[in-house]
Length: 177
Ligand code: ADP
Image (cartoon, rainbow, N blue to C red; front, side, top):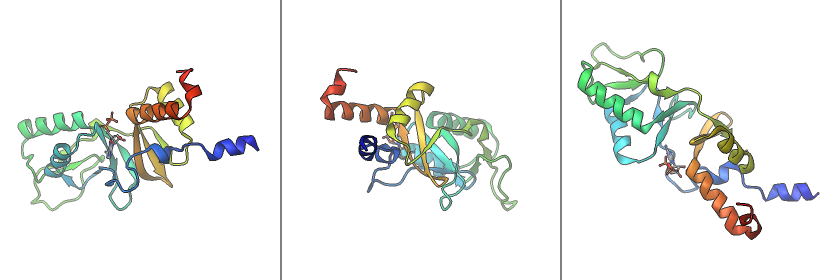
């Protein structure tokens, strides 16, 4: 009985992940349909350390995770050194380039900077377990899914803030930190 009571108070991954209710949606990159310009806009308008890559906006199926700094370096390099890369060039993270009309500009393959197995937990995972995973695996971020669809992200800083909040709520726990 006690254990059950305790469980009902537990914070879950979905309570800590971003976006929060009423926040704008997660900033994601699609695997083979965004242009150089689309992705440069994301880089310029957000400051996140990384972006989940999904099959498509409709599916929200997770493909991997790409770091902001790797995107910036790769696009800068390609614009300077790779023939035919322009603002309207499609960037793809898949094995093969998407089928496009022959008249389309050269495409830019960025599969090599994609982390194909980013750590994920489901939205119902207790935060206690998430904190443990962050500690033991030294994670920087973790993605949150529901029924195989991408829902959100938890960064190391999000976890640290969550721990600090718990410490404020529960004076006893400060003694152990
Ligand atoms: P940090 O948490 O270290 O500041 P970020 O700058 O990557 O790292 O993230 C800032 C906040 O935005 C965090 O609360 C995180 O959960 C959230 N966040 C991170 N990446 C994204 C993203 N691609 N789309 C929306 N929110 C994100």
